[in-house]
Length: 103
Image (cartoon, rainbow, N blue to C red; front, side):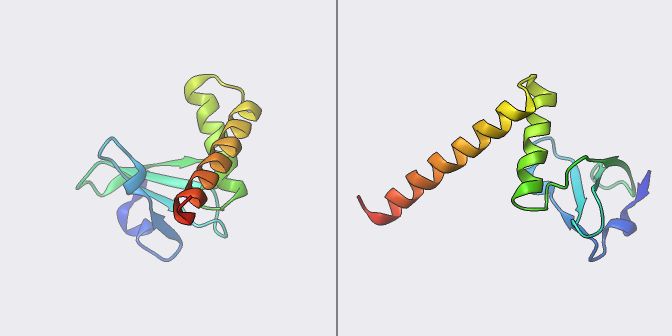
């Protein structure tokens, strides 16, 4: 368990915006570790979780974290998930560049 005041420091970043379940989430910045804390709204005590990869350590940590998460949730092997994420990012980048270029 972790108290809310412990995650309201410069060591942590709030990442609740990416959650779809209404819970509040804070992640440690990469230079401090790989933990994230999850709180029910309006409660002072939350759960602490340790990740193999820090999702805030862009780009490698983010990619590794998303690939591991994809494997856990879907069963798709982590290497395949990573390849799909990279391909999706490249395709999204090309689409965005074409859209910005007006072609």
